[in-house]
Image (cartoon, rainbow, N blue to C red; front, side):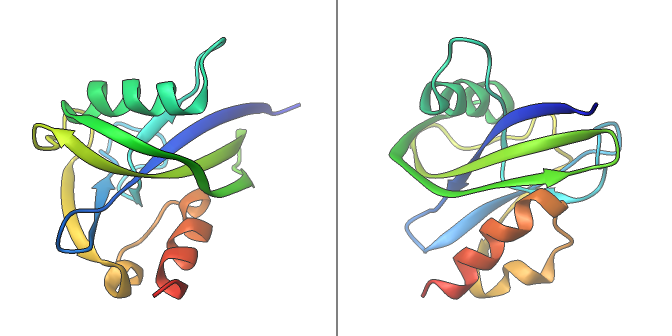
Amino acid sequence: MKKLVKVVAAIIENEQNEILCALRSPEMSIPNMWEFPGGKVEANEDIYSALEREINEELDCKIETSKEVFNENVHEYETFIINLISIKCKVVEATPTPSEHSKLIWLKRENLDSLKWAPADIPAVEQLMNKK
């Protein structure tokens, strides 16, 4: 049986209404695909604390979450199943700097489909593009 992994992802929007997109590095699983940054929820951790911790670790900045789930879906990959919970956030301290990702870019929501997204992130991308 495949392992189910609970993961949180940050949909970070700036003042120009652009959304932060992160390119997975060649060393990561699902390499060279775009995603919303985030990571695994640890035992005894709520999704909002997990997201704040992960963004601090991965992007060296502090965020504030909206305290509501924007999108949640389950996607089955070849070796595991991911329960991906996307939450809207904003940066409150420092500038996002990639430590694990190859690259970070800010994109307008109507241009999000120009990137090759990790399959689990696609439902949130579609929801963002359909919500004007």
